[in-house]
Length: 600
Image (tube, rainbow, N blue to C red; front, side, top):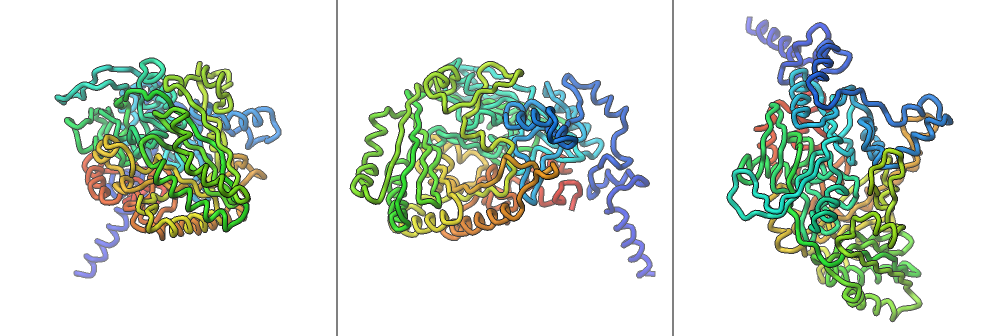
């Protein structure tokens, strides 16, 4: 009899944990069951979708791939127009089926949702969350679609698209709800607001600075800031997450809450660095603003060595110069080590005039001048009045090569993106990896090892160090406010974030005869892995930035969040016990299948 009972229990367990079928749609309500797909009986009926539509201020739509016309005829006029359009980041953001990346080799491909709630209000977001929870649907959240890891698109899903929620406002004396503290000047931005619009509000209208992203078309309230958010001047003003004073969000139970240090402080901590699309749908955020410096500026150029031996010496000398002169609150952005024995410079600065910048660079320039047979240096310094940094009219007149204007018929006044970002628009990624390099990596007693490591890595692929994405050397305020967030604490020991990425924005993996060259792509991935292994070996206790990381990152919980992960997972389970919100390598995603459809 005991064996019969065991067999009955075993058979019952198999039935309870199986994927829901047309004959047993109620299985979807079981906590271990799978989410519903369009071909299953549990998928909402047409009248239920119509009921959702009627409840919205915005609208319900069926997303379409921006290159759908090319699947019929590559040579058609409509296809060629589509290919042109998807290399405009503003176009990609203007359609529910668009994303800024096409996919990742062997990881994900950009795919449209079955339905999209084109939200206009917070109430629209509430309706979408409640509908997805009730019908056990996979939920995807997208503002601008700037995401390397494919977290803002998925097939067989309901998309919450916040593009139309782009209101901005300024408050010269903001105090978070329920708090008793000194008022500060702040701006509030909606879920779909781009950083260009946030800068135009804060700087253009009110002569203040808000810490945001470098790319003008990245979302100001979405995954960028929720994952941490580094801007060109983060060593002075801190991370985007550190500048959040308050947030409104819709939680998994469909409730609207206001989170700040005095109300729901746990989820307020979590959404500032714990990753987007995880704890709720952020519908608006209020961000601290700062007094403008006198100037912003850029140092661009290159330094080339005539052979490997000279380049090794150059790398070491440049790293010493970086540690002594650039690892402070004035400097940001990047320099790259190339296999052709060249260091490429694209560095931004704030609060310095041209004479001061020239003085800072004079030690390195003097060293290079002493070796004219070995090195060639080209360097250009551009200064911009701080209040003109995001003024498209000023930029077009004085430094027109910096910007690319949105020339589509639907363009709004003042829309542009930085020209170097063009190469990333609609890129299909072969790989994209990052690793924080601690300040100790650049210390005198390690400088030879550091320079050797970067030289050897550059033999494989280009290695770029983003000095604004490490907070060692940052201002005290940047560090203090950063430590109040859930970002990986490794960032406070890091002088720079090393990034190696490669892809192609002239291939289209969904289109026959326009796919990726797999042999070439796999070779690049191998070279990148070899180069990154050298850096990880040299700084083994560090980590990676969650918004710019390897899709296949091992031990991602520790690598992305360090000691903060356990607390983040606890908060995730408190506010979203059923896993309504899922995304790849996000907090709690280890409890789901790789596609996020079935609970493990």
